[in-house]
Structure formats: structure tokens, C-alpha cells
Image (cartoon, rainbow, N blue to C red):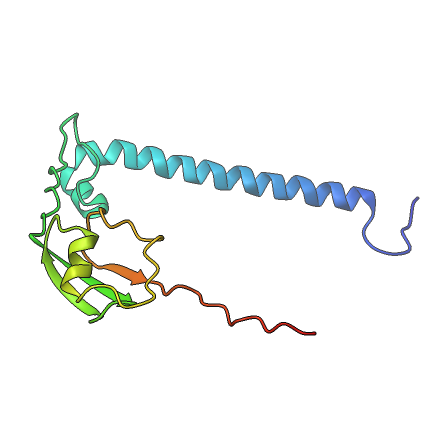
Length: 145
């Protein structure tokens, strides 16, 4: 007879593996039975559907979803402008206003404003942040002799 020096024998390992497979199979059967029970119970008791799922599943072929309302269109947009403008801050404008209009309302560009990165014809959106960068100036190079 084989007597292991350390740990369980091969036979013990096989028995343990068979037990764990049986418990997995039992758990799968329980889950499957629960799903089947809900599938049968929900059409039979429509109030159960409302309690469990809030009416998101159709009962007996009837659609219970209510159509969603389209989002409200805002008449105004609130925009924050910062950087190289005369009066940076928060501006409330009508919907459909362009970035150029926002800059004009903020007092225009200051000296050294970098407008190359800005799309002035773009339409602003609510809660938008517009930042006008300054042109990077490099210090003059001193020639060494």
C-alpha cells in the first residue's frame, strides 16, 4: 500500500475533485430552477413584475415601457471664457451663439492672444469652457563671443 510522506494521496485528490464538481452541478441546477420559476411566475402575476423589475419586461406580449421624453432644449447657454481676453468670466448667451460672439462679449482679445488654436465659427454649448492662450514669447538670445 502507498503511504504518502507529505500531503494527501492521489486518490484523496480525485475524491475531493469529484465532490467539488458535484457541488458546482447542484448550484447550477438551483440557479436554473430559479430562472425557470421566475419565467413562469412573472406572466402569471403581473404585479410581481412591477415589484421586481419596475415594468421593464413585457408581460404576456404587451409592452409596458413608457416612451422617454426628448431632452428639453435650453434657450440659453452658460459659457466660461478665460485667458487672453479683456473681461474673462461666465457669460449667459442665447443658444446658437458662436465663439467669436463670446469673445466680443468678453471685451475682445488682449495683446498677445494666440487665436490659431481657436475655432471662432464654432457654436457654443451649455457649460462650455473657452480658453484663449497667449502667444509663447521666447526670451531674446544673447550672442556669446
